[in-house]
Image 1 (cartoon, rainbow, N blue to C red):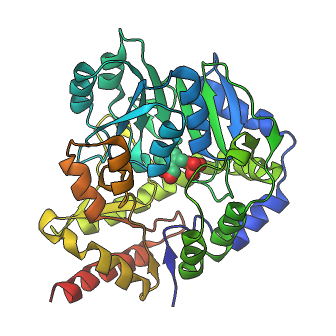
Image 2 (tube, rainbow, N blue to C red; image 1 turned 180 degrees about the vertical axis):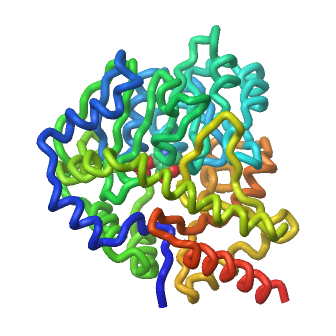
Amino acid sequence: MKTYDVNLKMPFSIFIENIFKHSTIDDLNEINFLLKRANEDKSSYFFNYGRNALSTLIRKITSPGDKIIMPAFISPSLVWAAISAKAEPHFVDIDLETFNMDPDLLSEKIESIEDVKAILVVHTFGVPNNMDIILKIVEDLDIHLIEDVAHSMFAKYDGKYVGSFGNSVLISMYKQVPNFHGALLISNVKLEEPDSKEIFSLKFLVDLANLILGPHQNLISLIRKHRSFRIHDELENKKPTDLSIKIFSHFLKTLEIFENKKRSNAELFEKLFLEDNRFIPQKACENTERVCFHFNIRFRPDLSYLRDSVSKTLKSRGIFCGIQWHDSPVVNNKIKRLLRLKETFPKTEYLSKSIINLPLSPEFNEQDISYIYRAVKYTTNSIIK
Ligand SMILES: Cc1ncc(COP(=O)(O)O)c(C=O)c1O
């Protein structure tokens, strides 16, 4: 049986062929050249993980107790990064079409609290947020705008690449391309460049296994269960390995082509899913060119209770899905208690329960897409009964 895995970015054979056949001369310079086209007044800094880059930046631009605004639908690791930097995260609910922070609610939030020093805009799963509204909101305010393009490199808002609007941009070296780890922060703030390269950690080995094994999720989940969630201080100031930088610089050159192919495949998926009103695909706004970090759908509200069983059952048909972020901070009791969160975020709460991230590859053909669609549909039918 063919398998489809949301975590498998590229077949291993192609990955190895690419890395070892075509080596580059100066990877760091190439990365800087490609990514700094729109960010010439900024400096770039390498980190092992995006969460550590974010934490270092926040520590630099805030004093203890200052506030940072984030989308409510977000990876908890970014919230822990803010907490570890002693800032106070405040959340904004999302727009259910785009899954991004709702800019109108952002405007209300800014008016309702003081000492906001930073806003983190995440272009979730490759869909750009509305930068016109966001730039207008921060126009006369002394607020540091951070764009997180971990999912969205080469997406465009109004013809401009995302990542070129903020004061800082956070780039992941392993989310859109197959890699072990690595993050890049391009910022107009002067930071301490992390001084040394990372040693092989347990996480590194888990990520290596993930990259190579793809579908062997049970083994990986088992290892992950034993991994601490906290930022490891001893790794905080370390850079990625040479290998991660080499891999990233290599794939960066072809990422835009890779993303264009994924976008065409996502359009095929979308056509099919729009025929069945039990599923609602994530949508991009009009003046944007999205990239597709997975193909993301949500169950209709009255059917969200099906999500966990459907995603589990799909594994038996060789389809490994994601459910990001089922553990959003606003539904995570540990974070809620720590931050004494009293507000509710109804759209994020619903999306955390109803989302499924389906595998999407530039190599899929119509048969692959139709197979996945039919599997989701029939699995849902069989569970409803
Ligand atoms: C959108 C987004 N940005 C940044 C991060 C953090 O990246 P890293 O895993 O490199 O710490 C995550 C982690 O899941 C993420 O989903």
